[in-house]
Length: 309
Image (cartoon, rainbow, N blue to C red; front, top):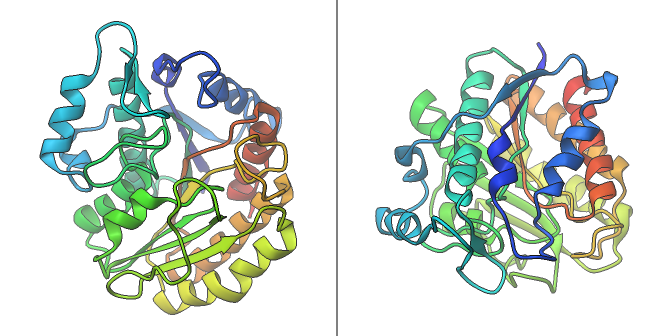
């Protein structure tokens, strides 16, 4: 079965202050990369508008109400030093939620083997009741919880290879034995979480921190030696990928020195595992990646793997 690609023009309407790395041009880089004829077989559709009951799977009602209240009708509202909202932010964030849910539905119902949701803003830093790190709603976490609620899955895994630790995803699933959260990330680096001894209440959090300059060999070893064995033992029925590409060597926000081939490699590894435990079901959502060339190369490698294994 084919790979599904979900995007939406609203991603361009989330406007950030001048010079901010999480800029609308990221979407153009992704779309240009996937316009290559090699990706003609993708099923392409628009991400629907997410529903607030989906958001509430991972974020509390007070947080949702407060965020909606501060969303501006003009200008920019600064939430913190890194995170701000423009008039287009609310819809853009809900399109990310809707895309993650729709991708999960398509994969679970067998319309597609796997899916890639290319929207912004990213989501993995958004905690249960706190936006941060460019993020408002945890799209990958919402996909996992939706799969549990809607399809009765007993075990879902979220795997995160963004250069920054997904503190929000970890926060959401810290006490949830049904979801395993695994992350490679650079330490020390924002947001400061993700030490190897952070295991969750049910030993279902797997952190594999790396150091600046570690590169491909140590990144792959973290998966081969730590993450993949624990995922195999957990046997997830769906794999959700937080696909951040800011560990690419060109990226200005990290220093892990990965290459596009590393993202192809890890995607194929996760697909192989999904074939054994999850009927091949994989949902991937875009997180970071702030050098436009590095982002384009990495998305190319990631989606090529999704399409061809």
